[in-house]
Image (cartoon, rainbow, N blue to C red; front, top):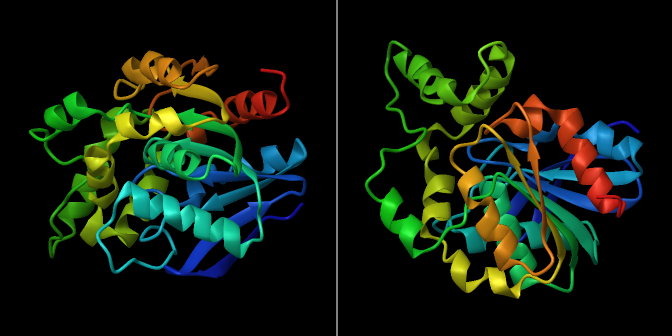
Length: 265
């Protein structure tokens, strides 16, 4: 069950995926400004559980081609469906974390017949109130490139409060991904903050699990609203982790996901 990385041809250019395992396909969507690497340690666990994990680089992030159009959640979601088409996937399960969770909502809303099971991890509920609140917030990741490289330290410091102090390797992985998209670090956040989730989430029909790290101050307050908005949705909280729950606690994350997909949770 070796991990395989490749590009697929789509209407948005060549989009990059990393795959591992056989069996039912599970598409994995990362947060901003990450890449497939966020799921690096989750992929082999899904494969061991009998699933084909497919971690997708969102259009414009990681190694995927940059779209010519402005980035929106709708565009990102259409890119996911384009990847699924290129891989000849009819139906699939879908997992999204933070930005990836918002994208997953739109995929499930726009193609309900294709998404069997949905996992929303650390996903904010984006409605008019949230859109209003975030307008006045400072950017999450934006830095200005500096000749002395001080922007690298700024990138690191921007995210330090959200990452465990004893795992600088996790933060290094985020910074590495961020450097690839340095000129558009906020595009994913901006797309989330413009999305009208309240108009779309009612179209989701997939069986749904809503996850969140107990230390994720951004998304944990929205967990009850997401559960209430999707009929039959279940929820779970990952202990002792926050925003980076996918790569900070991959075993626990994968265990919850696979139990849900297996019908055990």
